[in-house]
Length: 417
Ligand SMILES: *Cc1c(COP(=O)(O)O)cnc(C)c1O
Image 1 (tube, rainbow, N blue to C red):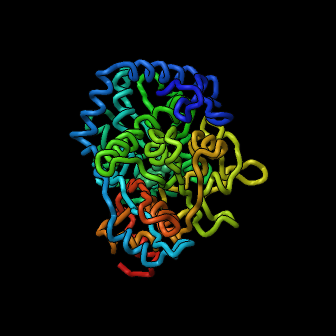
Image 2 (cartoon, rainbow, N blue to C red):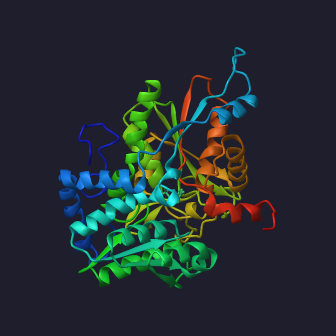
Image 3 (tube, protein in one colour):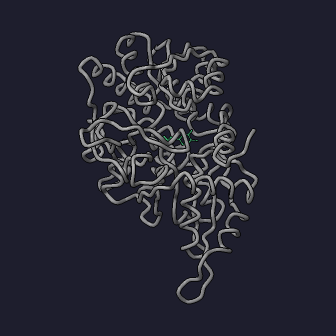
């Protein structure tokens, strides 16, 4: 609730955590006092300039912010070559700019949120941190801040993911975290998050649960968004400084939706700035092998909030698929569900194949190896840029670097390593 202006897209959620009909706190009675306590402490932290000062200081000196704003000139030129001319024969092809959050410490945006939440944990006197992780990126970012603050860290990870993501499991262990494989359900991210919530209830006296995306019961979706909003706040100032105006279109990839909200939120009331959220279409939206909760799912309740979910006819949560492990969460932050229904943000989906092509395109044109998650955003940028005039500006969030993905890409390209 950073902005109380009526009719603002930025004044959600309401005091019960609702973004329109979405969000809320659908939690067991045992969890309710915990989330209320967290909310009380978050309100106090928001009003405390010392909290903000410490957050800013760590972002600057530990994370390496502000991240650069970069004009991708060669990519822009490359896309212009294949852009059809406009109706009056004019050249087409928008300028493509990137917010370089892949340059953050640990290589993605997740650390912004982890810094904010561990400062809250310390404020609340908690001495033990827990987290869930899917591919391991949030687990690594959480283990990182726990090492930095000297707090013990337990990370719940689906047993299937533990098998698939050994390098990240080892990273977490190097950083001093304990990784607990979860064997319930399908043994992936959804189940790890359930296990995290169970641990939290059982150990509330000393434990803080750091959630990795803008989902979960209120106030998590709001506070994760607020911590990630540093991305959009910086970008707004940087754009004004560099070109004296705001971009025409913002683009970001969506798993649970935290990096996208971080970029979008500070611009939501700028009516001229259009926004595009990019979900993972996997092997196509027709079957079940995708992770597009908004475009291919339906509203339901999961992990304490109401939102769009991948589910079958019986309401059972289904397993998403994406070439990018960070995008296959079967839900999406409730604020996105509301932004979709309100029409403020447009959503699209990009297939594995399109993301792979965009990954290689960025490597070759800009000398940047992106993560597979933002490769989905880059693919959507390539489509849109070709339809826009040359003086239009697209700003995409380059939310992670691709070192972690080179084995997956080699495999997909049929390269033996
Ligand atoms: C985790 C992750 C995502 C997906 O999470 P969001 O909450 O949707 O941002 C996207 N990109 C990268 C690089 C990630 O690590």
